[in-house]
Image 1: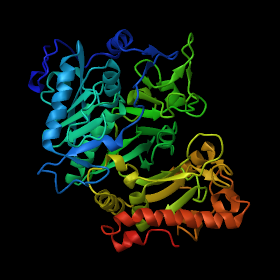
Image 2: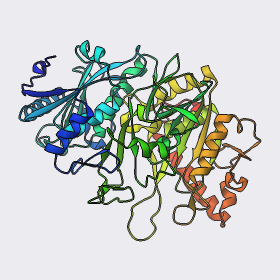
Image 3: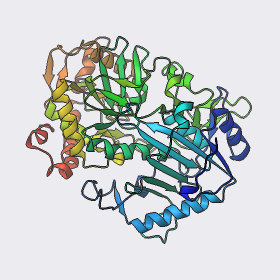
Length: 527
């Protein structure tokens, strides 16, 4: 079947549309410096200077159709239409200089009612294989009748933006035009920009239809009787905890909640692989085989064994693989209405309980807050934890104001009677440097108890600082751990630290108070 990109102004003779993983492997190995194959069969690729997203270089075109909808500011920085056209032409000119291009046509969203057709145009086989994994792959019949896409992503990341173009602050620019239905990438070859570009598009379109788009993982019981969603920022365990052999995996990162239930936006998973081990995360480990992409990892010269502990390139080492490679994946990736909504946080200050039961008001407050705490720096010597507040646990990808998503979540919780939980996967017995990271086996036991219903009727005590209902017992978890103050040797130090974290919450929430209801504001800390 002939295929042309002439409508997009691209006239490269050698265009490979929806090429097979084997073909893309060969192309990457032949034409992309540093590409190789791991000992387990995954394609190892390097993204160059940028090894993570560039949120400060993200732009949304200020167009009449979306002007009153978009949450303008540091997340969605305005770009004028003329600058977008300049960047687009720059991208097209670059793509036209390549000897070969790759096109990936796929779907975003497993529910046919809300599914989008996405086209990726890129110059690297690594990028094509990555999006082959991350989009929902069409059948041969669907590809024959694919037609024109709903949105096109032009990935010209190997070419910089012109700093003299109005609105540019660096050589990197990631630009989205909802009117033109196009997304342009310049100056970064980090593959995750494409994935999150699709998510941003869905985050705008879905709420317009009364659908909640969510930065979360989702699982279902093996008998199909209940679904859970797990929210969390990077490093909190969202992907790890969703890879649960006792449950079916709907997806690890991006979902929507409709009037019918939840659906996965993606056709694959994009897991952090820093310190990955076969014992702790066997499903992810086994998925990093032929067809998977390992990004920015180090490996042994002759054996090609990947050293997952090596952070010399970046701590943000990643693995991309198709959902089908998870033995317990739920395909099609759709589920019923969640019975449990779990917020994950890695509290490096060591003051939040391992598990708390939230009221609806607390759920809204903590959803808008989107809290975690990252360990600062890796220099010699202990550094203080750094608090991170990312609204709706996905601030960089939101299109509307956070309260829009919070209102949709509140509506879903009320309508379907879901219980919300806050699960701390961070530190216990003290802050980072003094206490210890909560063991994964304890967090898994807590999540298991939520799913089994074992925690639903357990007696609780109110946390005096945050007002949470904290369970007093949980199977396979030491009871003294459940009350964080009990795990600190210095109780006065705990009290001071808890008060400090409560203050951080209140300071962060101030930017949303004007749009938040009195009920939501009441869901915050008590002091």
